[in-house]
Amino acid sequence: MISKKTKYAINALVHLAKRKDEGPIIIAEIAKAESIPQKFLEAILLDLKKAGILASRKGKAGGYYLLKAPEDVNMADVMRLFDGPIALLPCVTYMYYERCEECKDEETCGIREVFLEVRNKTVSMLKKSTLLEIIRREGQQKNEINED
Amino acid sequence: MISKKTKYAINALVHLAKRKDEGPIIIAEIAKAESIPQKFLEAILLDLKKAGILASRKGKAGGYYLLKAPEDVNMADVMRLFDGPIALLPCVTYMYYERCEECKDEETCGIREVFLEVRNKTVSMLKKSTLLEIIRREGQQKNEINED
DNA sequence: ATTAAGTCTATCTATTTAGTAGGGTAAAGA
DNA sequence: TCTTTACCCTACTAAATAGATAGACTTAAT
Image (cartoon, rainbow over all chains, first blue to last red; front, top):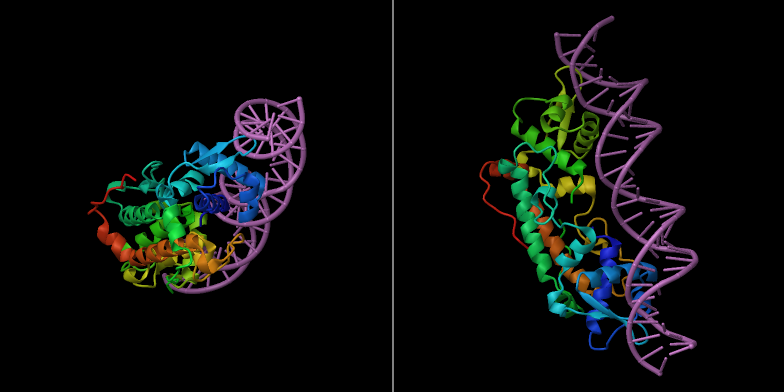
């Protein structure tokens, strides 16, 4: 599961992406519209700004706005920013590699092999999941939860 | 990331799968061979037994052994047992469905659509990742971590 | 009866998550 | 200069989860 922080970040980003031509949107407005505790949202938006995804303007007519294009903001980047690595094992992360403590021989580990493939495919899917893609899919849902 | 508990469970299962024709293996032996705190492992094996994956014999010549065939034990089941749902959002889990608190309209939610697809494909991959598959892959690694 | 095993119950500590409260500073527009 | 907004900081809490450890009890083979 992703954290609420990440989910809030995604909600805020989608909100900003939909209104990207309206100029800066104030925090209070996003917080209210997306049902996010305002103080909590402040910290989230600040992190997204530091990551180069959002920009802000202070003072009157200030607020936050998307810096990147909606098609260039993907779920892998957002999840990593708030929740860390996407991989299910520390030994198959790209940026934050760590050996499994109990591991005998990483080179021949079958568990690692299997989870490495899962990681690569998951990251690839999440990279394709951009803000544009999310907005495009709104109102045209068709998929169902597989019963497995 | 999966919890250490889940990782320990997988290590223990692989150990038992490799030696499935040797009769019951005692906890202490698995704990030592796989570098798992013994008391912690006890609880894990008990859970795996309750789940119908392992069986045990008490007393002298006792221990644990695989009840299911290695090809019938998959990572999705093991992960769910110890870490809960595989889905990244509560609204796209099959067994433990919960609405996102802040969600306005689940029926048209683009975020949900995207994460639902991720979930379905992830579960499908993890279901294919059986103990047999893990053992088969040992020593024939070829995949690399994608640089993304 | 003895011994070797699994089983059950309880407790503990550290970390993380998800906030709340409340202050002050900086910048930009009117 | 006044107001509005973002920015930055500290501190605190409450609940849950992770990762164990300790000790007593039960079962089964010899």
